[in-house]
Amino acid sequence: MSVTHSPSKEKNMASDKITVGFLSPMGATGDHFDRFSRFVPEEVTLEVGGLDLIEGPLNSMEGKEGLATDLSVRSISDNPGWQTAAILAAPVQVYMPNLAPNVRGQVAIPVTTAMESAVAALSALGASRVLLMTPFDESMNVQIRAFLAERDVEAISGPQPAPYYRDAAKLGPDEVYSITKEGLVNAGAVDAIYFQGAVLDALEIIDRLESELGLPVVASNPAMLWHALSLLGHSFSVPNGGRLLREWPALKK
Image 1 (cartoon, rainbow, N blue to C red):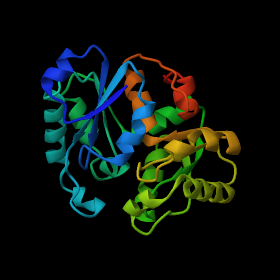
Image 2: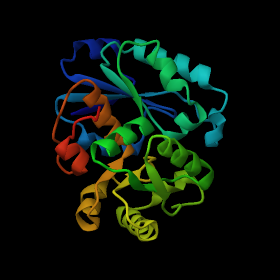
Image 3: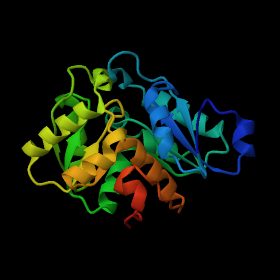
Image 4: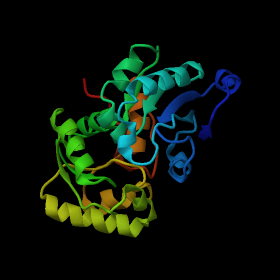
C-alpha cells in the first residue's frame, strides 16, 4: 500500500504495482488522504495530483471547465504509470458536468468521478434509497440529490454538520456518528448511507456504522478506489473499510 503526492514519471514507470491516480480540485496533500492510506491494498499505489481549481468558495470553479480539462489531461499524460484515475469532489461534477467526458475523450485509461463511483457502488450493493451525508449546504446538496435521482437513486439529506463545509473536518468520529444517526431517524427507511465529501470523515467509523445501524456505508474515497480498480477488472478484500471494500461486489452491467 502506498499513497504519494506529485509522483515522478520515472517512479510511475518503474513500479510493478497497480497505480491509481486521484485528481483533487484542491492540492495534492491533506490529512484525509493520509487517513485513507490504510484502505489501499498492498498491491496498489495511490498517487494524488492537485489541480488547484478552488480559490475561496466552491463556486469559484464555475467557468473553469476548459482549464480543468486541460489540467486533468496533462496530469494523466505526465504520469504514464497511472492505469486508472478518479476526479475527486462532488462540486467538481456539479460545476463542471462535462469535465469527465471531456477527459475520457482524450486519454486512454478509465476515468471515474466521485459521484459516478458512488452510484456504481450503491448499485452494486443493491441500494436505491439512501441517507446522504455531506459537509455542504442545501444549495449543493440539492444538486447532488438531482444527480443521484437521474440515476435512479433517491437521496434524503442528513443534517448539515457545520455552517461552512471545511469546518466539518473538526468533527470527531463520535460526532460524525451522532449526526448520522440523527439523519437516519429523520430519513426513514433507506438501503444505505452515502458520505460525499472527505472533510466529513467517516473512515474511522464505517465498520461501526454498518454494524450498529445495520446498513452498508458508501464513502466517496473508498468508492472511487473500488470503482477505479473495478473498471480495470481487479478485485480485492480490504478489512475495516466496510462492506464495499471487504466484499468487493462486482460492477453491475
